[in-house]
Amino acid sequence: MRQFDAAAAESDRIPFGEQFTPHMVTAEWTERDGWSEPRLSPFGDLSMSPAMVGLHYGQVVFEGLKAYRRDDDAVACFRPADHAARLRRSAERLAIPALPEESLLAAVDLILEADGGSLPQRPGLSLYLRPVLYASEANLALRPARRYAFLLIAFVTGGFFSDRPDPVRVWVGRDHTRAVPGGTGGVKFAGNYAPSYAAQEQARQAGCDQVVWLDPVERRWVDELGGMNLFFVRGGGPSAQLVTPPATGTLLPGVTRDSLLHLAGARGLDVREEPLSIEQWQAECLDGTITETFASGTAAVVTPVGEVRDGTESWQVGTGLAGPVTLALRDALVDIHTGRAPAPEGWLRTVGIRGAGLGRPAHRESLVGSGQ
Image (cartoon, rainbow, N blue to C red; front, top):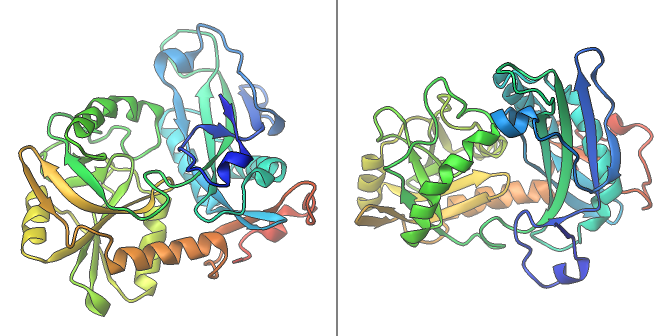
């Protein structure tokens, strides 16, 4: 485990998921008492039984959300209530007692107050928060556990692929599927991720950055990109159309996806949620109908797709670079993150950094939805 190195952060690119802040937040659930109050403690190793249910049977769900430095005294967490709602849906799907929304928000406050000062005021950096719910009971009976734990950790990070909106090359996955109808594709289940590594390795060997997942039934409809949602731009200018695959249960409905649909609609774009086949994507890129493609997610923010490889075939998207719609939506989102533009009501939760000018907020809820 690497603690965050503030000196290195002044110049070096910070890899995703490596440099953790000094604290973590934990809570426990029991049948008798329900969820305990979240508590802050130093970042450290966990103690567990070799028979822990989560380790053996994978009863684990998680979330990913970000906070951004606003000034010397505060950080703002982006849409934490929406992440809390998605964590609840994930928990219910895995038969885990849902963590109350107010408990996750309190945990976010605790870690941001303690560690928000770890985030340098450097463009492109953010504090990534990782809440996890897992079955902690030591019992290998094939049933839902009767004891659970909550964990929240944080790390400082730059962009998932790059600190700039550089285009990525993607690989169409034909040998594997990410999810199945009625399965867990629509929630953040820990077991969704390791099965994707084989396909990701195929992509890497083909010189690509990520895997394009196709639907699990016909194997021709575009679902999502790795762990990110996909968007397609038809045309350009004020008449541009923005298309994203519908959330049918096999792709994860991202909070960033929802944010971009809102921002695009507010900008007057023709926004549509409709299926797009892999054949359509290729044909419409070749005839110039699709001018841009980009991925979205908490880690990736907005990342342009420049080239698609499908077996021995490949095609370029638009100019192969980030297009004007992609860049405009990315800028609009980043401006909200960093406070350069007002946020829609309820999108930001601003928290004072302990020891700074704002101190510990006496009434945290008064800082919610401030639009800063």
